Amino acid sequence: MNVNYDLMLANVKGDLAKAEIELKLFKTNTSMSIDGKLRKDTIREMTNWTQTLKRRVESLEKEMRT
Image 1 (cartoon, rainbow, N blue to C red):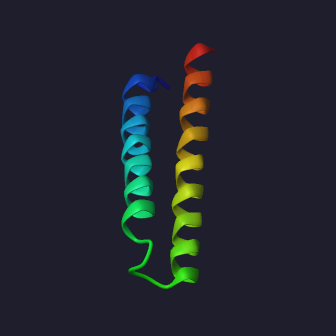
Image 2 (image 1 turned 120 degrees about the horizontal axis):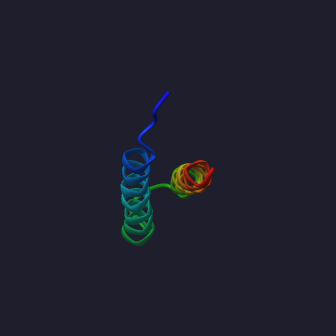
């Protein structure tokens, strides 16, 4: 099966960049506007998603090399 890793990698890198920007903006713009526990849980979920995308980028880059 022929897989276009370049396209997949470009999409994941775009999603990663967007997730990092959204996380940064959320952290800076919600300090007093929402409940502490909700904010903490949301930041945790956003951080987990960002880390998942980073692992996906690493995985695709590794697959491209093989």
